[in-house]
Image (cartoon, rainbow, N blue to C red):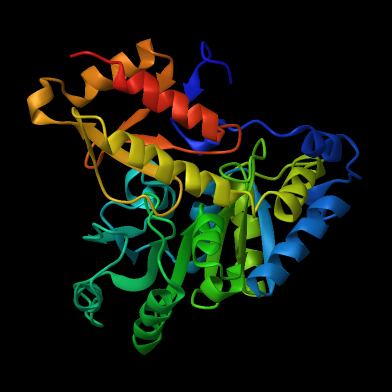
Length: 343
């Protein structure tokens, strides 16, 4: 990106597929996936099942669909999911599990992505006809860029087993957590009954996510995917991008993490900016100081005037996300432009 170009830090969903990925999409061998006959989709599903050490996997259109079909497969009408009050499923998926599945959401505080295990235990309903049936615990990793350790996931799983609950992991950015800890995906997924992985964020594919779990769960999820209109025909075009991403795009996430640290360090030197928590992976949160006379909206607008796009998270501040297509020199340029802003 040149000095006069836009530096888009709104999200890692704005990534554009690299040329070799596009070539893999063009050359993909195709079939009808609704019949289970797309060889590229089948290869992707088998690959992810192996990576996560699960029985099977199901390619879906998006992370929201992946979380939805997984939760609907774990729970029936009148059941309850325990999850974080700041989680993506609770706040950013239109309450789909409740709207479509008649499933209640029991939210508990997760200010750093983790539940207090005591709070989690107290949130589990006893066998009482007055109450909904606690059926599933839903976790998110990473959560606003903060990675959850495999050890913590296993602690939650142990508690779940003691109360006959299942665990689902919204792993839209689990690849980032795995790179941060330098651990294989299976170290995280061993602690959960199902996981959703997104290819269209840090791995830079045009679209697509996948759900992995037991044979029984994936069979149910396939039916829910069809009911939601998510049965795609020659989906191998997208699956080919995901296979390329798994083989070639995971290690480069380290660059995004280093760029996030560089951005946070640079912003912390600007007098009118206060940097929030992190970064551990690829997200930086910050806001203008009280003394600056600016609010978040003012600063976001002024950064946009300088060609820098960011977003606002209500409870956390201005969010900047590093991703494929943003290089070190772009971060250095962004810091320079932001520092030039006058209030």
